[in-house]
Image (cartoon, rainbow, N blue to C red; front, side):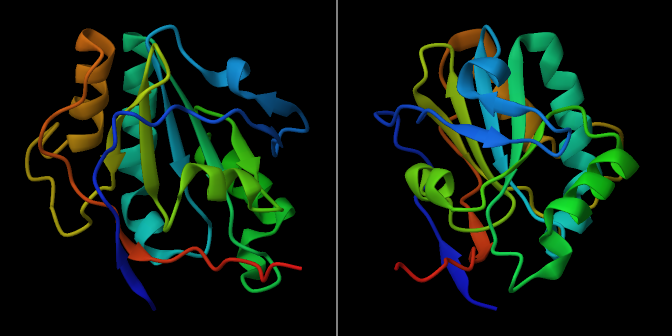
Length: 185
């Protein structure tokens, strides 16, 4: 497993447009998922043990962020020829099993993930209402929640974006296993 770390946030970056197929049979564009106060884009995949360790926390936070006008979307960008668990059919089954509260999209060409600069899963990109990146990070699977709502860095960071238009100064860097990029050409 390749370990990689990315800068936390660059507030000059704007959210790129996208149009991707969802596992529910619809095609989604940016305007279909953006909330009135911001957008959370999560790159996640079925095969990743890290995603499995924090998935319930992600889904809880996504549900709660809807109250703050933050729209969310999950995108899978790994090549399913390398990871069969990430096939479109398996994504659909996972989406239904977990009752995902947001669209789960399939970035087969990996072009959208490349435009976002996603490097691993789960990789979070939180944009404010104006479309500027304010939050980038990931959940720490080693943080055990001993009391309700402990260590909700994703939720708290995006709640701040919804309320102030800016993310927190301190954010958890994105670090984990790399998305396996397809060879160009």
